[in-house]
Image (cartoon, rainbow, N blue to C red; front, side, top):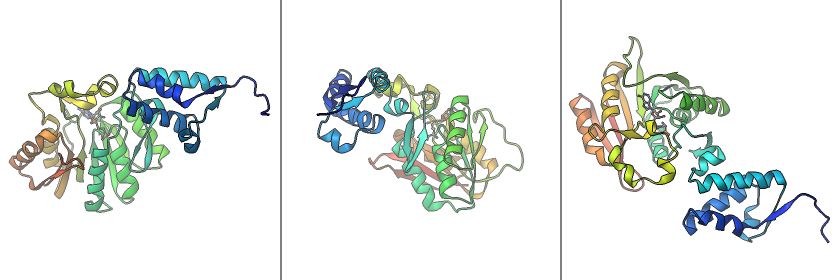
Length: 286
Ligand SMILES: C[S@@+](CC[C@H](N)C(=O)[O-])C[C@H]1O[C@@H](n2cnc3c(N)ncnc32)[C@H](O)[C@@H]1O
């Protein structure tokens, strides 16, 4: 006979799955309930897949109710957990900062093959700091600076920089308004700027539209290359000779971005595809 455990409650995995199925497909509810049970409530994967009940304290029960309410309100699981994985590292995320995406991991992977370790790197629109911090950790001699316009993003990026023991220098700066001073040189400028056009909103999931910051995502329909054009202009005065731009782009604008960069005098243009076969990265040389 089991010893009596006061004040605990048993919760079944199927209760959690069914609660989530009110808002998600069967597959999505299954994925989310595995994360809730195993990553947030400490159930082992074996017990989860055996469908064993969990024994929760009143506090854990309250936490579970909050988690389910947030998920049923379409809040992204990364915000509910407070973390997102990016290239094997865990980044703190919260509403107000973009959740790092796998396409951006691909951008950093390309850079790691090409950028020399002592490079001076500028990341424009750093968000959680995922690009800048990854480069700082994996190219230990690089000198990495990162800009963002958003207070929230910079607070979170600085917290990630400290937690991951990286050495990125973060600066609050509006790239659209910035006039560079003299003597500010970089070998590489990387950016994953806002690039979703307003008209693409209709195709987006509720958990992105309702929760992720608009200022991190959207550009006007009539000027989808706004950020790329501005960064390319800045690059002409801030990139050392032979220096490079690395951009993550909207898949609809690969050729348009390359044409704009060529017109600004950049050379050795490359448009690379992501794992899904979409134009996703543009690289150009000064
Ligand atoms: C698409 S998010 C990318 C975030 C992060 N680099 C990533 O890849 O996950 C774009 C970022 O650009 C920032 N941003 C938007 N407008 C900006 C501006 N005018 N100047 C500087 N940063 C800006 C947003 O705050 C946001 O963090």
